[in-house]
Length: 279
Image (cartoon, rainbow, N blue to C red; front, side):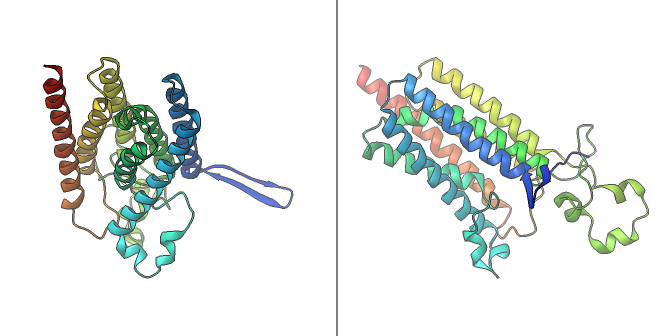
């Protein structure tokens, strides 16, 4: 069993204190991203006050974009009670919605704040990658964002009452099951949370190597977006879609392909422009 949704739970005096894994790693990911971003920007002699304001604004765009994407793709969940879309909880977010909103908004905002747009994008690679990795660890411990059934040796089984167990073992089926192992937990599934965590780390490392080789400003960020979108495209084929998912399976596939094509075209355009001005 690989799930620990509650990291800390204690009764202290008259108060019941709980720390949930997903909320903890979500907050840790945001704080780690902020700290790394500010440190790197400071080393590149960018104005600290502007950088801090920029990060706060981009972080807000990320959260808003992630929630909007989640509402649009899981409209069945929100249809009967739209107030859920405005709940201040560390849940109900779609990662790519946040990345798209933060990327577009960040590039526009940096110009308005007289900050170098593509340099700010490159600086965001390490904070973004590490933030995603930490958040996916929270997903794994929480038992959400799980994969399809598998017989692979590294497949994982989540305990009773986990999202995976409820997804694969319907109440009526549970009554009829006689297999003790199945009664104790979900079928073995792909640990898609771990796959994505590993992808975030690998894509970040690749992008940083591009950054250090000075291929040009913006290349590291675009390489991260391309490779991570490709990883998400592959991982999506192994992930179990939630029952509240209100759009077709082709939605995210199409979105990732569009992001890959557009980002690749931007890299090619930047290289053409660089050659033109270097003549």
